[in-house]
Length: 486
Ligand SMILES: [Zn+2]
Image 1: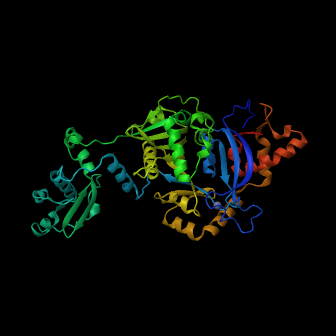
Image 2: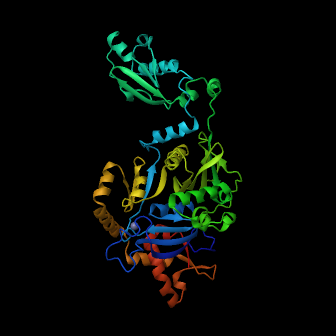
């Protein structure tokens, strides 16, 4: 890193050092017994104020265990804090989650309420569906001429497997898994040679019938879901966003007066400091009406410079139901926070599914969910979204069944192991001092970027420990790419 010409460097930080605070996860219950004097303050973090960071450098910080709240960047001190926090992320390409279908079914049912069962009969469509699947299992087409389907209550049933067996002497060991998954089918069971199918009738309307006779034929009005991305500083001035946030804080976090927010003065609100302010330069994101996201638009990342902080608005029939605060970073989407309305759809889980889907469309590999806290039941849900990865030491550990077991049974020793690893990898005091010597610093009263040697003896004595602690926390690569404002 060469000398900096001026303080408009893309990466400017002010180290705040280590601090203790009350732990919102365990309320001090997990504080070490002899950790007094003030065991109520059992959460320990190292913090930086970062008025300006490039998305690339922030991604490095994220991968070193940091997170942000507004422009405050912090790293839990997992060696000393009561509730160790570990970055958790999902690999989008091969992500699978068994809860996904259930959530999407709820969304579907809400947007397309079921019809009265007498209204439409889907026998013809289901005969075609069963035939198609049996053909895929290499059953002779001639044997499938007489598939019959009966309707008993909500269940459609066919005895075609018994017909094949007794009439055509074909014993087909078909199982539920042999049938192609269709959104229309709520359940498909094979019992004693009968195939029993239950439909989500709302889905049948939209996909079994020819498109021209869709909703019109049955008089169903579907609700329309839309997604809109807004730069955070523009989202701030949408009154429905702030209202939703206050309602959510009140309801979910029992906050009687969320951040003392004055809706008439959002420019000076806790909401703004927490979820709008960010270290990324976003003056250029001046899209008054935001970007309406279409799922088939795969090239959105090429059309827009999305790097930075955005609010993703989820709307159902134009009504705002959820806002997801997202950082777009190189090859990563980081979920900063998400707030939503009370709803029959499990909105929080839905946001994870949708956002992973967006990542896939846009070929973003990693979706970051924030911190995973094994010791906190309230925060363990983050490990329940299929297979995920948690940051451990300087690498990532797969949180599959085995990883969970390790986390659960060997939590303490695991962290010890990690500490040792970190100990080993940590570069020595001589190197730390060397890196600190090269960091560009700007003093409060000046705009000139200088190095520590330029300070007088007293100045060096004050600044050196700050810089060395900073280098130790962020590592060499990050330290070399920032200007430290003191
Ligand atoms: Zn705690």
